Amino acid sequence: MDQNMAAAMELRCWGGDWGLPSVHTESLIVLAYAKFSGAKVTVSPIDWTWKTLTATVPELRSGDSAVQEPAQILNFLRKRRFNADYELTARQGADTMAYIALLEEKLLPALLHTFWVDAENYANLTRPWFASRSPFPLNFLVPSRHANTALSRILLTKGEAPLHRITEVEGKIYSDAKECLNLLSYRLATANYFFGNSPTSLDAFVFGFVAPLYKASLPSSPLQSHLRQLNNLTGFCDNILAVYFSSDHPCPAPPVQETMDANLQKLTQLVNKESNMIEKMDDNLRSSPQHKPHRPEPKRSLASEKSSTPA
Image (cartoon, rainbow, N blue to C red; front, side, top):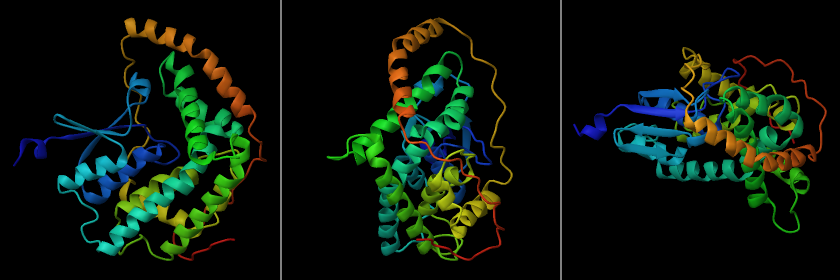
């Protein structure tokens, strides 16, 4: 066997919480696909390490290879004969690509806004979570960098003229996201997975996008309220967690703190230089409209198979 084919695989990603193996959408996609395809991957969370700033996650390392981004990582696994899509027809393969494009175009902007731009969610959930898993002084820098990146990505993809400000695109991105969730719910119907009796790459992508929105304790999220009315989608997430991740430990213990060296001084200087950027980002976050906190109804039984698609 080729040496590279036999090399162990290590996945660097953000760690888990909220009952999920990772809170990070892209990391969750890869983790799910690895389970579906039977790939043995050693998970190395970047939490509490300097990699919270320097690493691009998810990243799969095997021998001399280092692959980033879910699509590239899944292709890498397929080349190593870990293929969850081998039974798909050509039509199903085309549908998979179409639905993944739909997720990225319609649902991703709303997820970015929900976790990183909505002022209440950012202040009470997202920022504290990422700050608590980044060593000093990165705990001041990492959340704001993610938030700034999310805001820029939303405006770049959705801020066409005359919509140039985040407050002007909010209505559009949430309307698109609800439409996307409704379409996924309709397509899934009463099945456990989107194609047949076994999960495929589409199931991994849908799980990665939907599960954090479903499981996070968001103080403000009409989109989460909408999702929790779609019983088959929430049941889909619960089923994957029960079947593939029930024995996992989503919150590994923090590693021993890395030795502080010259990097500390450099990173401290970096934090100081970017303080103005952080203040500007906070101003942008505070300018976002506020919503009343949503208190979701208790989760329905996993046995429920009825699909519900609200208008």
